[in-house]
Length: 138
Figure (cartoon, rainbow, N blue to C red):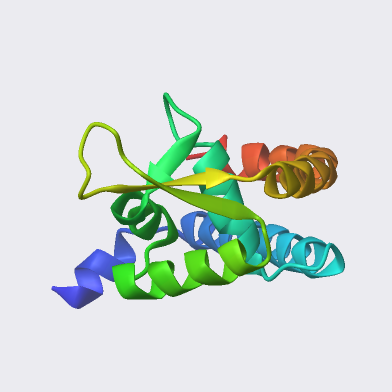
């Protein structure tokens, strides 16, 4: 059975998958370097991005951030604490549910995120072409 499943996947499909993973990794490495050059870790940058990029509002809670980061909640709490200590985020108790903690960007965090977004946007244009070429042949 494994042999027939292998035969069903063409060489071209493996080449596209390889190229897709390569382009993803290139963009990830670029992003990691950009974050470090702006004085934050890649995870701190992603935390800020996911707070600002949360659909429908400008904050997120710990569970939502853990899902977006694909991390355990206790690890995300520690990450939030480090960002709060640096003045990048602010914790607020939710008015709707006092058991929930909202994580908001501070002005400092917002300014940093905007700078990184500009760097990423210009680089993403380059990678978008490569991704489109790979995904266009599926």
